[in-house]
Image (cartoon, rainbow, N blue to C red; front, side):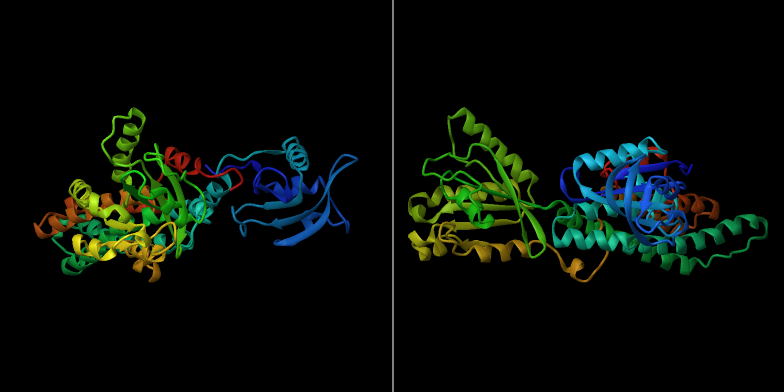
Length: 461
């Protein structure tokens, strides 16, 4: 059911600022604001054209609350598809509260989280995947996540899904038509063309499913665990990468007794660096808890950096090799970077001759030597080719789940077609595939699903 009441919310962050924007949406939005707005030119908002801005005052009886700019957008040519009014007022929290309370007393109610975007979806202004991209766009904090969100919001992903869905629907209609003429043994759907379509859909679905591995880490930041023995410079490296004194640095072994996390952006890709406790044997109860957390963080990380002190390599070389092999054997699928730190105090030839590892880098975190090579190496582990080519990348776990289920049904149809399954049984699996396609764009939905999606939005969006 489409809501018919009028909602209001603060669209800018709460707190003091230069200006604040209040958003009002609903059939009566313009009339409600008109009753409390006094234009400097004596205009009535209800008589003005859509997409126009008007200077005036918001008044409560004889009391002037603020001088404001009022923008009006008449439905269906607005974000929500309804009449929308945006009030730009001064950013005093007191003024914001007074104006909101004024309209709450005069025909509005407070909007729920994401309700403006929910109304846009219900009024056909956005499909569901585009609506979800709005939240991702607001949350994007690097170039890559922003690029993915903006592409999805503009309909790149939903357009690709809808095209496949429509082609499958056309064939499904022909097969359903055959069922009406079952006694006459006619065939409307060309089976060879249908098989080609299913192969094409399967390839696209597999590509989209595979893209989730890249999209998910780009959206959430790529976790990188920095591990190694105590006092080899893990915290110094973290500070060098982040250009700030984020971690405690001292000459006392075991200074880092917990994990420390921070983020940075390298060429538009977000990385989340996790500085962990060392992995030496210890009887210190608190430090041993930190070591246990180290292995937990390696499990969660996409990339592992093993750091050792190059200045003491000769006396510790056997231990270093054992620890490297321990990480490689325990986590064979994870990219491992091996960093020899403090090379300004070491014999680098001895290290190169002793350690035959492909991803060995020589650095000095304190002197900032080799850190740019480290950044380049980290970027190599991220498959951004699809991003650069503007291909569709899946970042939403709900979409990923629906794609997996759709692929399963498509493969059932393929198997049925090859086995000579009857049209009525093929139609069942095709309907299931269409159902999962519809889940992504919102042709198939329910109140619980919408509630879960839009509850994660901010108020005012």
